[in-house]
Image (cartoon, rainbow, N blue to C red):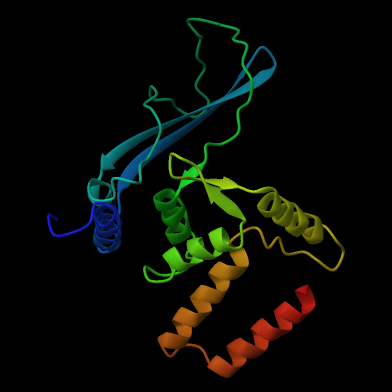
Length: 201
C-alpha cells in the first residue's frame, strides 16, 4: 500500500474485495413480510435478519438493510398497542456511487470484473451521468431523457422491450456464457441477436 499513489489504493481495494466476494459463500438471511388489515385499510411490514454474513464480511460496499419484527403466523389476529398518524413526503432514491453501481451490475449479471469499470466510463464519456463532489453518479438531462425515451418506446405496439432495464443485456451475457461453455452455437446466437436488434431499431 505504501508503494501506491493515494488515489490508486481505493481502486485496488475495491477490485480485490469484489473478486474475493465473488468466490465467497452467499450471505444468508431470513425475511418476513407481514400484510394486515386494520380498520378497512391494508398495511405491510417487512423484517430481515442476516443469519450468516459470509461474503458481506468482505464486500463492505454492499449491505442488507432491514430490521427485526416480532414473529407472526398466517391468519393471526393482533391488536396494535399504538396508532400514530405521521405526516411525511416521498423522497427520491439516493444517488449511487461507482461501487454501488458495480454491485447492482453484478447482481443483474451485466459485465465482468474487467468490463464493468469500462461500462461506467462509457456512460460518463457520453455525459449520461456526472460525478458529484461526494463521488456519486448524478444523471444528466441527457441521461434522463434517454431513459424516458426507452420507456416511451417500450409502450409502443411494436416496442415491448424497455431498454433502460437490464433484462436484454443480462440475457445476452448469459448466452455468451453458454457459448464459452460450449452449450450454445455462436452463429445461432448472433442471428438471434441481430434479429432482435433489427426489430428494436
